[in-house]
Image (cartoon, rainbow, N blue to C red; front, side, top):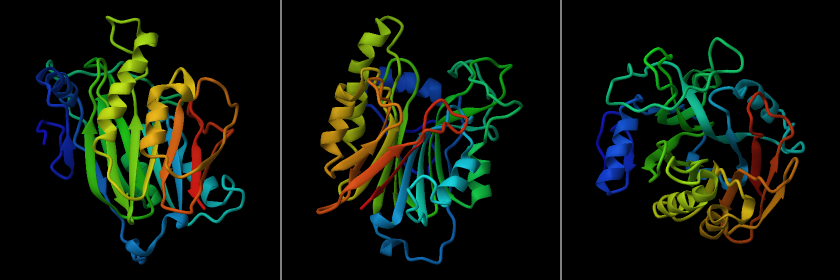
Length: 307
């Protein structure tokens, strides 16, 4: 169990035991606010909703630039599922941003260089949009979006939004060399959901592009060690510059992706960054597609389901 200024008591925390790692993570933790967690009432019995009744989305929204509102509208219309009806859905988002409730920057806190919105004045606040859409939310900031006291008080990280209540939240701080990365795990109905965002580059003392696959290997092993048993859907930006042959993608495929998956990617190439993995039980298949439309982000959403 980990303690610190940003580590909210409303969820379980896992962190590396190495003292140097803990000191590094503490500095990044000091720059962000608490996790944001809220649910929505439902008339359904969540335990009775099977995995086939849920549509799953993984999307890096590029520090709040993704138009979640427009995307959800199109998702609910069936535009992204070939006419397949969309009732319940779960969004696994990376680089979500919060623009309120973030503490002032202190001298002992670390922050990332600010990524500003494409459409000023503000990025989409993940807490505000979840309430507007009536969705359950678990948002855990990984880092401050800005390293200067003159930057707006914002943080960014992973989020799960769902039409179903979310329960049993766990935050897993990953080892690393640069920024702080936090995996979120929670349950929607009886299905575990995990959202992951791995490092894009290695530390400044390394040949960053070539050494970062090793860092991602370390991060996926750390994340996989705490993944729950049973039905599981994992979505994330793995930042695999060298594509699906990188260890990080192959490792999650072995550890999680035991359900056969059909993938339809827009602009398929070697530089695959975004993935979904399914563990859905016997005699089931999964499918996900990468959309053509970016919806304001620099990543295309992935939309998937189990058949």
